[in-house]
Length: 77
Image 1 (cartoon, rainbow, N blue to C red):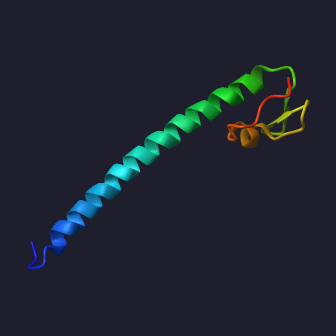
Image 2 (cartoon, rainbow, N blue to C red):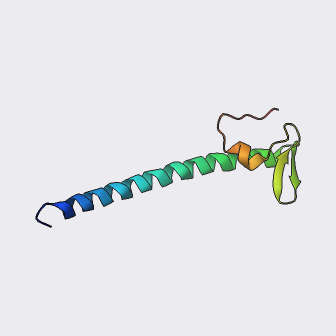
Image 3 (cartoon, rainbow, N blue to C red):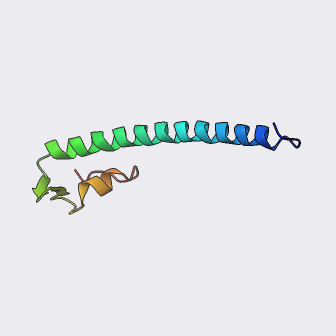
């Protein structure tokens, strides 16, 4: 500990940073799982088609991995 308590504040700040990092990673993991589920549905759909290594939709013409990341977007079918 320093004379002004700066070290204690730094440790507290770093601990807060690690907590936020962990919760942010959890949110990202949940969003990624939801996105993966949406992409899998499009892969099984008759309107999904592969152009090279990318998945597209015949109905709306969208690039599926991008559209799947937008929660407000819906399938035209």
